[in-house]
Length: 366
Image (cartoon, rainbow, N blue to C red):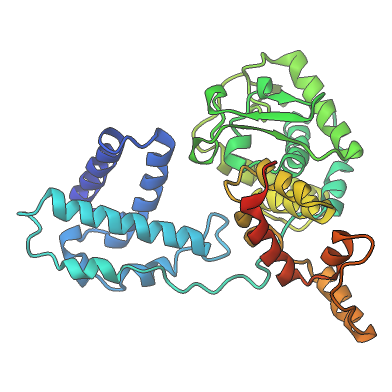
């Protein structure tokens, strides 16, 4: 049972973040999500005795499962939870110095991210073949929910959007003629850190056709203020579309529906975020110039091209196999020929390319 005083203290902290540090509502909600783990760990024990609770908080976080329930928390998620908890305790000691004068402040510094073993395949992503298998799924016309889910899966791959942003995307933000998505918080799109940008779809004609079909259908049924991934209502065996705005946890609903879709298509399940990975891998594999590479980074709404390179650039298993096999034929010396930089870039290893991208990123203007 969650200690009531602990709960009230976390709510006061969230109020402080909102009113004093002026964090936006979406960021405050993320802090609340992180602090829930502290409340569950402490259970009925007051946070003033946190140093005495066993297992220690980092050890407890190492046992927490991720949203899908079959894997540990992602290392980045565990790190954010620990950081939020540290900030909370520091605020607690500063705000209530008399009440917590006996609290061992040094304990706060023991809050460090747990060592969580990464999954066997860290760079898992939805492939183009898997998306096409989903696109080929035969669905009855009156099964609006599954038709919507199929279009959603393809849109996630083509756009590279985060599930939270996609689930709050109004029809008015989608311009398929220009292949453009207006990820604008002013339109109600819940982007990460409230960033605002126009991003673009991969131009893969057979996949675009499926998305266009759904887009045309919903525009005949709903106002443009309704969600592109609109809720459906089932009544008396019939499905209708709803113009109502979905709840705050729409990304969780998207994840659950994707499980059903993957099962129907006979494709091994991957979370909605793996469509973003697939989008990035496809785009980077087809990038031919540094300008292309930067465009991919901007389309993912990354502030720094190094973020794109560190997360999405690792080679796929097949590429590693091909490159290793090619080593037996001897290596080509690094040189610049009549073709200039083309030969130079082609001769670089993946690590060398990463170093080159990091070095070049600050110098690129567009």
